[in-house]
Amino acid sequence: MPGNDLSWGIHLGAKSLIVSQTLVLHFLLVLFRVGGIFAFIPIPGIKSALAPTRIALVILTSWIVFPLTPPLSGIGMTLSSAFSVMIAEVSLGLLIGLAIQFLHEGIVLGANALSIQAGYSYASTVDPNSEADSSVLQVILGLCGSWLFLTLGLDRILLKAILTSFSTYGPGTFIASQNHAPAIIALSGEMFGQGLRIAAPIVGVLLLVDLAMALLSRLQPQMQLLNLSFPLKMLLSLAGLSLSVTTIPHRVMQASEGTMRFIEKILSASGG
Image (tube, rainbow, N blue to C red; front, side, top):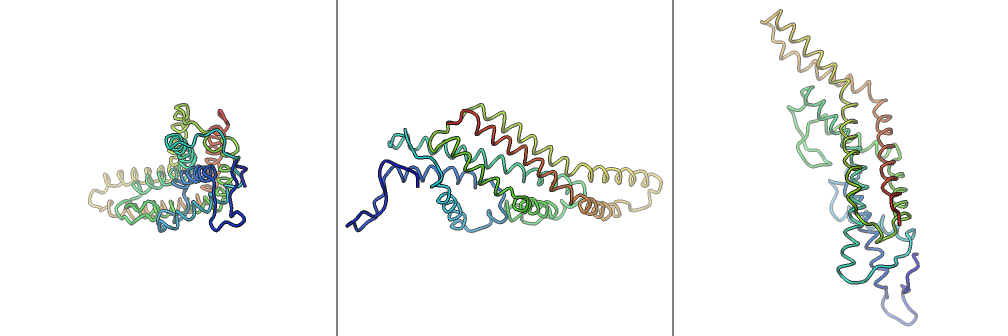
């Protein structure tokens, strides 16, 4: 348990639990940082889960991490100072969670581009993660991306990043800076690059199909090639995805290495 100035627990002869204000503020700072991270990470089904379930997950994770964090020191107990350091803790958590969310959004962007080209965007369903209308292919690849987060062991890397963040920036010592903005913008560009690498090979084949259909329509104007192109493009997109099943996890791992380097760069810069 972190060493604070005042002890906590049930004193001998007391009938109530006595907890120091420093201990409460320490746990709240840990809770705010962990909550900021969990606001973005792509855990399957976390967005569609009940609010008490998500809150309990954040509190349980914070309670497990709390004894491993350095003691709280040098923070005034006024309301304004406590509020400012809590905002800083949330910003650090959101920064880490947003960087990890870019991995999932790269797959979703690639699926969206492929859905438009293949014709799957004409039918929509509800995405259980975002609770928005999305194409069927986008929902399937989005769920696959969420499961890859667990199967590739990125959840363990996330827990390690949380502990590393508290080792570098103790509770209440992080100060948000404008120097972090260019790095997160550059990382968001990698999200578009990842989606392009996933969708580009299949989209290229579908483009060749469109060109072939255009030439055939010029040769045989009476043929209803538009009705034939949709099922053909859908089948080719599914065939291309089946062939790229073994390569998508490798690309996600490569993208995750860049994300973890970004997190390490943020945590190593002016660490307290």
